[in-house]
Length: 253
Ligand SMILES: [Mn+2]
Image 1: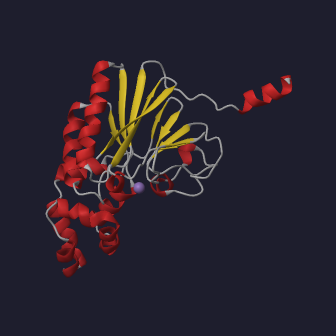
Image 2: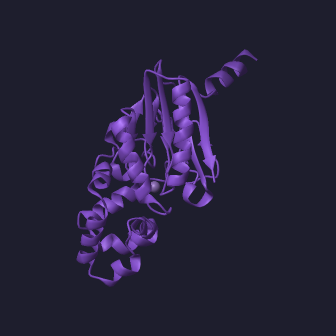
Image 3: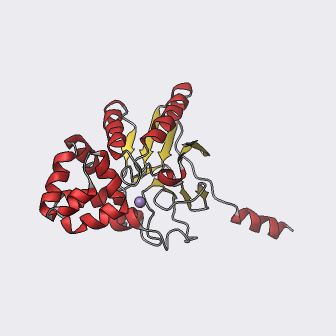
């Protein structure tokens, strides 16, 4: 009986925590849903005001743009917010990566990006996919560069790939199991699904990620996925980590 109980104890989930007086709130993939973002930020701000912490981090897990109707509004809001919130960090998603690559001249990816949610993005900037596809790739890229305000592009270029706080690692998509955190490739951090999603490996940290949609937050022993598919489901989710406690915040349309 003694052996059995010690076995169970050794199999019990390990505790993950942030240092004292540090709180982190991670926001899942917004994908152009400014309406939901405004409401979620109201909840987050109310929480932070009512119960302040010395170190209060707000981490966006990437994929702010595309698919939903108002990429422009989302980036406007975050450009403004960044000026007033020193705890704000934004991670790069695969959608920001695609748009930046096109702005840097990879016009061959334009058609694919438009079909992958870029159409809704450019419409929020007053462009039409039909017009862009009717012109030359070079001209289409020029029009994109003209339409997207410089502060939006600067915000995307400043996005990071990871945030590490206490026992937690925040990324857009996930990590490659078996590879040290410092050796992870941007391609994996921004795009990976398998084998990360099914891995049971102890990563040494709890990985908080978006990118792969689930109906409700997925809380596993080695990862927490909070992309609840806001652009289609109308549900935007955040995870609040405070000491060794965790709770989810969500808004629904
Ligand atoms: Mn993604």
